[in-house]
Amino acid sequence: MRLLLQQRPEGREAPRFVQLMLQPDLLGGWTLVRETGQIGGKSTVRREQFLDQQAAVAALESARDAQIKRGFQLMFAEGAAPR
Image 1 (cartoon, rainbow, N blue to C red):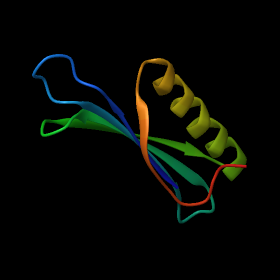
Image 2: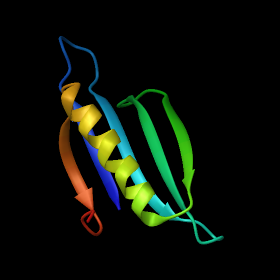
Image 3: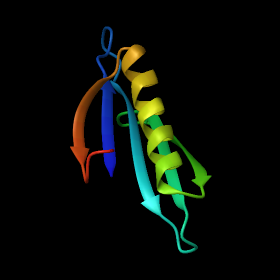
């Protein structure tokens, strides 16, 4: 699953983005990848490991909701919807 959120820029600055990706790992766990930055600029990538899919989906939903509260808008969603 992958979500892309974007915040409208103020003035002439480039828009900020947050990309959230949920990926299975090789050991049966799940990884939540968070990439944040400014379009056309540097970005930061953080990875968080989870033992089961349910905990990983809950963390993804929590991160998505927090970004929406900060003024980001969902621009793109790919993959199965979280249950």
